Picture 1 (cartoon, one colour):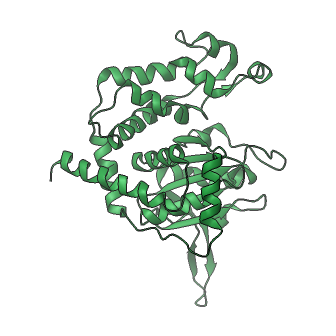
Picture 2 (tube, one colour):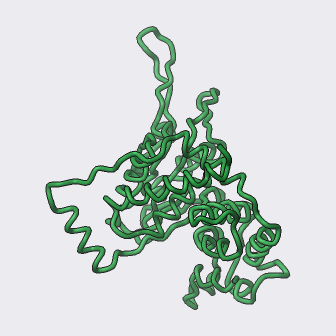
Picture 3 (cartoon, one colour):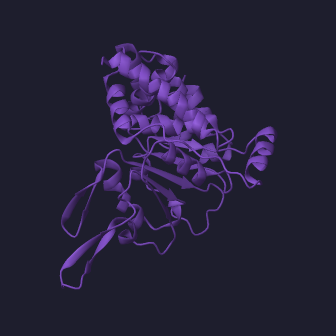
Length: 317
């Protein structure tokens, strides 16, 4: 089977996947699209939204439709790294036995990740970057495919620990969840206040996802599109000669090279799921906000003048 034929088959499965997810999740089409782009690109996502927007249900539904093992960790101030990674215990034969933690799954939902101290947050770093963990001197590979989908509440700041930039940079997307429209909320109430529940069918398998990721990597990209993506990222750096006046005035730190890599990967996936054989500049622009949002650090002047990160990103175009 040729790559083009395989790609067409995967696109059909993607359409079926979105249909299955819509049985349970009402609206949030852009959010779901960005999560799926992240998964098929091999990246992780940070979901930012107030409680009650079905973040956990959304991730659980996506995991079911993808046929993947799913585990959830509720992050709290007293959570320890061993609660995530696992630990060694002494069994009845007086030998150490390793008990795997919830990190050993295909999809890990890190709920309210900013509620736990940096030491525990850092336990995810190796897993997110290397797809492996080292515990008590032993190296363990995580089963592919592997994704971390973390949630963060933007309102409550008391008792929280902001994610360090090094860890934020490991998330491919930062996705903002907003309240549903009136019509969507009416539909949510209708679906969730009856005895009947919608069942989600499995559309993909782990092997399908790995094949899709491989096909995305093989998707060709024109040099001018890569140049455009790198220039957009360069414009976010206030000390760059290409920085926009808005960036020079309101930004302390811009995005690094990982943003350029993620822009191209996400643009490839966005193009493919929209039945295009190669991404163009518009595809890069379509995914840019989610890729750059958490990689640009505003200064105090931006806060006082009410300048948002999204408006700074839009100005880059």
